[in-house]
Length: 243
Image (cartoon, rainbow, N blue to C red; front, side, top):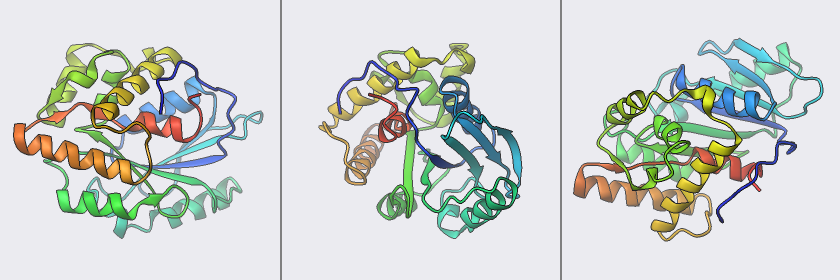
């Protein structure tokens, strides 16, 4: 993986499903990136499996679907039948067959929220973007991704908890609407620098994902802090939107 300086807004990604932890922030970020910036179709579903929002463009074959699991605990990923609900809803309401859609689970790695053992097991299980899905973590939370859009040296920062990262975002008075193509590249390059610091020059899923997790856990054990890192930018790389 190399540092990037271009966004391919014409990339056709087909249908991509995001299963997210939060009920607000993750929806806002993904909607802003994929619908507002990239112009993709966007559909969001509530915990009941019903459509909440839908922005459909007849001129675009790329569609982003964002949904919640039944609760924010990461263990619900394995126990939930939510993908079946999504399939049924989209087939019935939008006539969409998502059998071959890519799937990403976007979650926070916050010590206060999820057990280390459970997270590690899921990193090893969610090893394919279509069959099982891929688990994408932010250390310690999704707000680090927002921060990484504006702070070119965020890769040098540390956070004790999600609460501290959220406070940092609030203090900087950063607005989601200010994220644009240029800041997406800043966030991506922050991620690349962090990965290189972990001796990861080429991101291979799931091996590299597990390596990042182990490095972050070791650091937390020694210093009681996470090194600021969000792998949300990896999604743009994986979908070949970053070129």
